[in-house]
Image 1 (cartoon, helix red, strand yellow):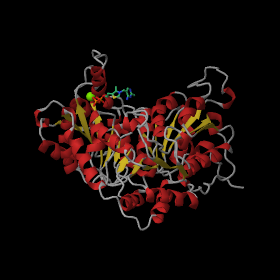
Image 2: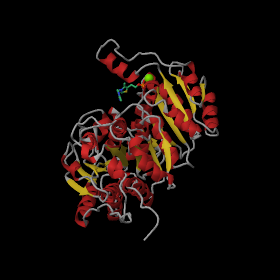
Image 3: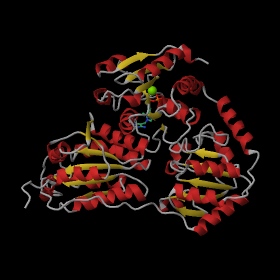
Image 4: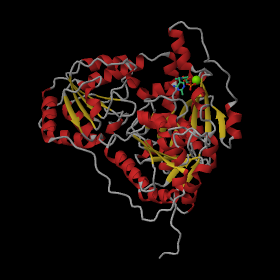
Length: 535
Ligand SMILES: Cc1ncc(C[n+]2csc(CCOP(=O)(O)OP(=O)(O)O)c2C)c(N)n1
Ligand SMILES: [Mg+2]
C-alpha cells in the first residue's frame, strides 16, 4: 500500500490538464478553488492572475485564438463564472476552444437556494446557451469523463467553449484511481461523391467565388490553389482574414462589409463557402444577396440549412475538404478577368474611403510598414479595426484578430496578453478605442507584471464614436457617447507601463519599434483629430 496520500479531485484535475498539454491557466482564485491551487502547486502549469475574470476569459480566448490550442480559465463559482461569461460568449461566437473550469457550491446545496457563498441555483444553466457543453460533476469519476468530452469537442467538432463546474465537496474528495487523458478523435471528412460533385460544379462555373471564414484557418494553402486554378476571387470574413494572403491578386481581404464587394458577390454563379457562417457581423446586412449555387463546407451540420441553404453540403473539416477539392480540380483554365476585377474593386474601396477611414489608413499604413509580417494583431471593437479589416493587409491567418462575432468591448488587451503567452516568440500588438479600452484597462497591471512587451495603439476620438455616428445617421442627439476619459498616459504609467502620445508618422514608427524592446507594455495614444492624420 502506498504511504502517499491520494490526490484530491482538485489536484488530479490539474495533473490531467497537464496530460492534455495545458501549460497555462488564467484566473482569480477564491476559497472555492483552493484544491485547484494545491494542484497548481504540484504541476508545471503557469497560473496567470487576471484582475477580473472577464479578463481571464479573454486571455484564455486570446491564447486559443492565436495558437489553436485550448485556452483555460479557472474561476470560482457564482461571480467568477458570470464575470467570465462575456468572454465565453465571444469564444462561442467565433468557435474558439476555451475551457471554463469552475468550482460550484457544495453538492448537497445545489438548487436549494440556501443562500450559500457565491450561490447560483443552477450554475451551468447560466453558461449553457454559450457553450457546446456545460456540465456539473456530481462524483469524482465524472471529472475525467467530462474533461475527455471537452477536449474531444475541441479536437473533432466545431470548437466552441465548454464549462465544467465541480462542487467544492467533490473537489476535496480523494482520487483513488489514476486519471489518464483519452485519445482524441479527428474531424470528419466529406464523402468522395460530394467532393466529386463539388469539383464538377466549380469546373462548370462561369464566375466562381470563394468565401472563407475562421473555420478554414488551417486550409489556406489548398484554398489558395483552388482559387488560382479557378481564377476565383476570395472574400474573407474577419475571422478568415489572411487564410489566403491579403496581398494575393485574387484576395478581396475581409471586404464583405464593403458595398463594392457585396455587388460583386451577387454576380457569382457558384459560391464555395468554407468554414464561414456568412454572418451579419461581417457584412452588416442580415442576408447577403447570393444568386449563384452555394457549396458549403462546414464541420457544423446546423449551418447547412440556415440563411444560406446549401445546394451542396459538405459536412467536413475545412482543410480535409479543401485538400480533396484541390486534388479533384484538374485541367481547368482559370477565369481570366478576375485579377483585373479584384484590382478595380480594391481601387474603388480606396477611393471611396470616408474622411475618418482615411485617417485610420494613414496610421495603419505606418503600422503595416513598421510591424514584422508575422506580428499578431489583437483588436478591440473600434473604428480603427473596422477599417483595418479591409485596409490592413496580413499574409497568414490568425494574424488579424478582430472578434466581430460577439463584438464585445474590452477584448483587445486581454486577448493580446493571452496571445503573447501562447506564442512568446511572436510580436503581439493591440489596437483599441478609448471606450473599449476602459472595459478591461486593469489588465495593464497583469501585462506589466508579466513583463510583456505589447504595444497598445489607443485610437482616441474621445467618444463611443461608432455609436455617435449611428445616432447622427438617424438624427439622434448624442446620448451617452461623449463621457470624459481619464488621462490615459498617467493611467498607463500608474499601471507600470510606458506611455506616450504620438504627433507624427515617424514618432509612431519609433514608438512601436521601441515598445517591442521594452520589458513592459507601452500605451501609444493617437488622437484622431491630430494634424499628421490629415491626408
Ligand atoms: C460590451 C459592449 N457594450 C456596448 C457595445 C456597443 N458599442 C459598439 S462600438 C461602441 C463604441 C466603442 O467606442 P470606442 O472603443 O472608443 O471605439 P470607437 O467607436 O470610438 O472607434 C459601443 C459602445 C458593445 N459593442 N459592447
Ligand atoms: Mg472612441
